[in-house]
Image 1 (cartoon, rainbow, N blue to C red):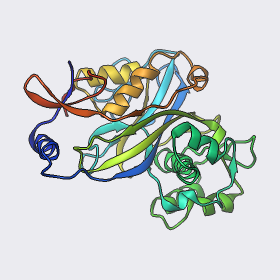
Image 2 (image 1 turned 60 degrees about the vertical axis):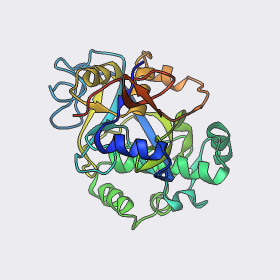
Image 3 (image 1 turned 90 degrees about the horizontal axis):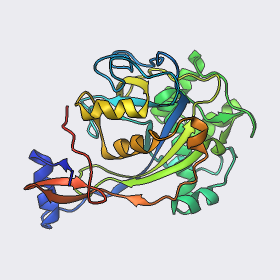
Length: 305
């Protein structure tokens, strides 16, 4: 049996919670988006050091091969309170204003998304809005257009950057952002992928729905700073190899998701999948005399950086 070892403060907290000496932290609703694109020869790097062609990133020394699916990954700064140093997908907590009915909407309704994710309509609306908002905040990619059939072609100007920063500091609501630009959220550009809940032993916990989406034509990701110190595109198999040989750190949900995506040849193949959403939460078990996080009886073993 494999597992994710819990040592030091993590192990002590796990034992306290299992023994009833501490209470689990409450969860916060969150959304994560796996941005996808078709593989490119040479693996265009969206970040600085540690991209697909570097020695310190997920891609390995040779860069991705031509073809296949690539995913967008951010490395969280070492000073972050949650998942410090980990490569993750764009995402974050649901803002209370994300459930605002004023958000212009095109595509599957909140009720339809709620049925998929086992959420009420209000939460489903918030999750989809958070998914689109956080993706724009953390990558510069916007899944919205001027109509139900169009998508913004370019979000790289100074005015877009001002709006992105205003969304981050919460001085601008997502509804007002879209309305000010005459845009509608394109929920049809998203597909449901997974539902993960942070283990009970973690001090910060999230109830996160995972989405997948293709990088819209004409748009480009960019290093937008904030919570990340590196960003990159990488093939899932390359990122997994980087995790196995210790070059990068992946949290269990990211590791599992990359493993699932590694089997697809094209972005269209991924988007065509009809997923049954099952809630996943790693549990604590004793493995070879030490406490570990495990899932489905077996998981991966990977050292922290």
